[in-house]
Image (cartoon, rainbow, N blue to C red; front, side, top):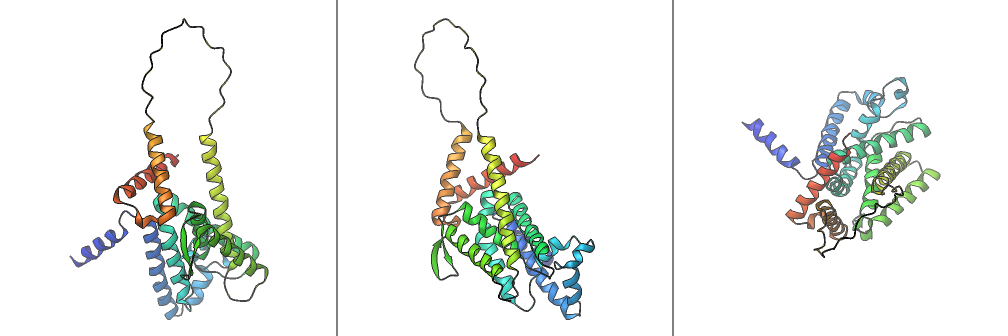
Length: 281
């Protein structure tokens, strides 16, 4: 009974709101404690060589491109703390807008892209979800550019400007390395891969929305008929839903997701599910 009670409590915590963000945070925390146990038993070097992203990947250990994202510095608890805090702050609103499937897909694209960037420019070892989180940060700034957030919990700033600041700082740290033991290349790689993916999806949607040109046809000759003025045609249901979703997104951009009503959250959830269904092959 106790086991089922704890399992049910965990399911309730995952809930229907941003379950992938909660699941990713849970996995990272559990792996962090497992990592401590392995280090305690003298397996720290094995973890670094075969689960972190290391030169051993060129020997066929390609799983490192995924496993490294769930490892963090055992000597610096703030590493995982700040990563998970940022994932929670910026990831939950993206998941509600995009849907869980699209969100987790984007997360791993940024994480793997960050790892590849690091591999091609460095032969060191890297761990952490920072590359994926920087991609999430970029997506938040592009999706909610004017939303006010507290940068470093000190002063308010628009999301788009915060992304620019972090991007510039990351680039400067790469150009002038200070030996701070931080993989700035991975951070930049996560943002670059995220940007390319978002632009590809934006271009694809624009192409789908662009009406196809009509071929010139000679209009058929028809006898004159008497027209009767009728009521204007009501808007299509899909257009009404799209307009409603746009209003909700504007509200999120202004006051945040937590200020939405239960009805608005339900509309956004249904819209994200429909979007996910349309993207299935």
